[in-house]
Length: 344
Image (tube, rainbow, N blue to C red; front, side, top):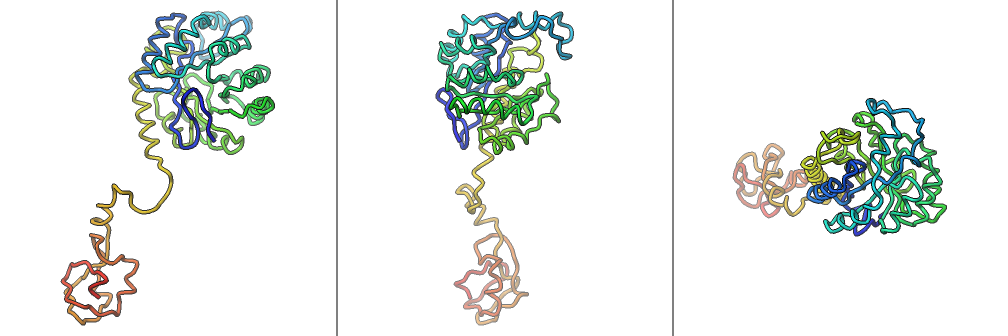
């Protein structure tokens, strides 16, 4: 399985696609948004992502405040204060691309989808909270662009319904992201095993949208098969706003990406075909083989007590010892010398 977003392939045998989620951490400041893009590019991520929503279409004025946002007066007012100026998106996308990044966003209404299509966004992300909105997902799927579905809070049938809507529109470019919808999320609720299970169950590419503190869980998700990793990002966790405090900062993002690439290189292809080229010296000089435990005279019959297993591995392999016993030495073999077929 593979899907292309921008100039990057995602899927089997490709590096994890790493998304730095700026989200609303631009704080409605264009210059701050640009600085975030600069830092994401410097860290070596593949994509930078924002969120495209309007409070009036996104949340009721009577909505209750989630516990993690206690201290803010109104959830509707807070969301309104975090809206991205949609007139910025074209410029942000062009700037991101000039830095070698892929620009993405999470559209939360049909107009947001239309606006992102106007600037030819290469894919669309559906936030976990919007997964039940099958009308929105269908509208996105009709673009025939890749659809990243975050699955925080979802059960198996909710995920299946979202996938079915995409496939009904002929869109098979689906990526499911495991997610824990807490801010920050505790490690023990990460449920990374679902990355593998969703991949097998739904026959899709899968990944991980990380809300935990630090980078341990994001790195571990690579070993569990995450082809996409999304991590909230900020220039400074002390900036005002609800999403800065649990986000990763520039030096941390860069280090996380370095670790992920190292882990990817360590996973390998799973084959066991003997020593790699780099191991050949160790294979010859440090492995065990059959040696003489005492001096053996030419013509003498070789017995068990005359043999010992030692390094290096230049002699006859140990598992062939039974084929040596009872044979005669062709020449004198000194104690501690490895034994070769030419000597017996």
